[in-house]
Amino acid sequence: MEDLPDADTPPTDMPPRYHTGRLPNSKAGDGKPRLLLMGQRRSGKSSISSVVFHKLPPGETLYLETTTHIKKESMHSFMDFQVWDLPGQFNYFDPEFDVENIFDEIGALIWVIDAQDEYLEAIGRLNQTILNLQSRYPSINIEVFVHKVDGLSEDYKSDTFRDIIQRVQDELSDHGYENAPVSFYQTSIYDHSIFEAFSKVIQKLIPQLPTLEALLNSLCAACRIEKAYLFDIMSKIYIATDTSPTDIGSYEICSDYIDVVIDISEIYGWDRPAEEGKKELIETGNNDAESLITMERKGNNYLYLREINKYLALICLMGDDSPQDKKSIIDYNVGVFQAALKQVFPRADREQLQPE
Ligand SMILES: Nc1nc2c(ncn2[C@@H]2O[C@H](COP(=O)(O)OP(=O)(O)OP(=O)(O)O)[C@@H](O)[C@H]2O)c(=O)[nH]1
Ligand SMILES: [Mg+2]
Image (cartoon, protein in one colour):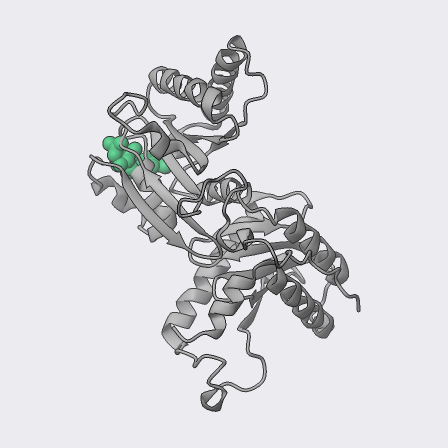
């Protein structure tokens, strides 16, 4: 058995920045990092936000109407953030818009490009936006979603992706911005790619990410875990994983597993009384929900899920040499991991103790 290294304890005399995920450079405001969804009309912005944050079945996005005004939503999860869906038809650098109000305090600008459509105009507007922002807000992360790649052949998909990257980078370097913080993803609401891309976008906004990764690495080493993900249960975004190479396959298995567990708990679950009212506690033994599932077609492998707090769940894909008879070691180490995590995200834990 092995103790995990302690997580960094946040200094107590400073305002609890880690509680809200507030960005280091954000002004007072409401302190919630903002994700802006921008791009041409019909590129898929509202669909993305409905599928990821509201569990809308992808097929039903066909009936979404065009957005006519800026739609602001607040997400309350392991950290608070806002998602703003900006209609495609406006130029936000026009004097009629309050540029500062829109772009101050943003964590990331997600630019959605419809890869099934003619994209030159979209790239032109994207480049213009990046150049406008670079002079005033150089630290904003620009995340380009090359979207709707589901209908494309593999060859066409990768050619389009390369072409878009090339055009954006050429334009930026022509203007002297060689290292602008621009990243590219291939996404579709019809598979897991949109969740993976969002996970990576959100991870950049979590100041504690290196600590989380180090904790997950130690956990994996101690229990011979093949891959471990820390999931935000509500959105199925993973907020951290160990630093071993990621493949979309293991993410898909783990995220499907969350669906299974949620479905089962909706049928058989019940509201548990808060821990403070201990007299009414119905459950005995382990307070944290836990679940195991074996994957027959993958030999010895199995999946292990442990609820970490109200918002987060740990899911581990166990390797061949991590048989179930070592489960007590895993339980112990996951317990240590959980304790360390409470120091990293104290808010979620405290809220869990308070009755709703
Ligand atoms: N094939 C495919 N279609 C998608 C995908 N995402 C969105 N769509 C479709 O694209 C169309 C437009 O989506 P919206 O989400 O309304 O687009 P929008 O960017 O919000 O458009 P505006 O509100 O007009 O700015 C809808 O019919 C969606 O079903 C995707 O990943 N793949
Ligand atoms: Mg829309």
